[in-house]
Length: 118
Image (cartoon, rainbow, N blue to C red):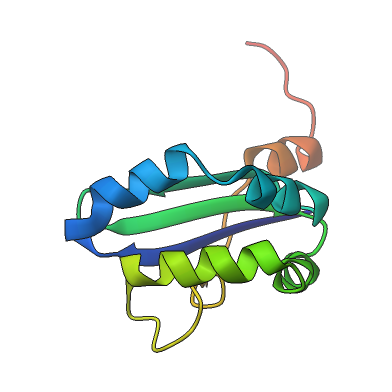
């Protein structure tokens, strides 16, 4: 399983509408995400528009390619594009900047030697 974290920049003046759109994502978009392997997917946004996303999937590139093959994703990306800055014509789901994971608690706990209580 891959844990992927990414950033995008939402236009600060469009944050309220962006949040409202994500409070009621189209049912067919939700179904497509689930069917193409997107799990535990969440988006978080700061008041200056910095958006941080997190998703778990077997393979992010394959999950993105599977979404690319759906009609609903093309429609969703076209509608969402106006909310972002710095995409240089890329669809939002292709303009994301992946972050490197430097710590994961469960991974380190699983690898750590047993501790003794003091």
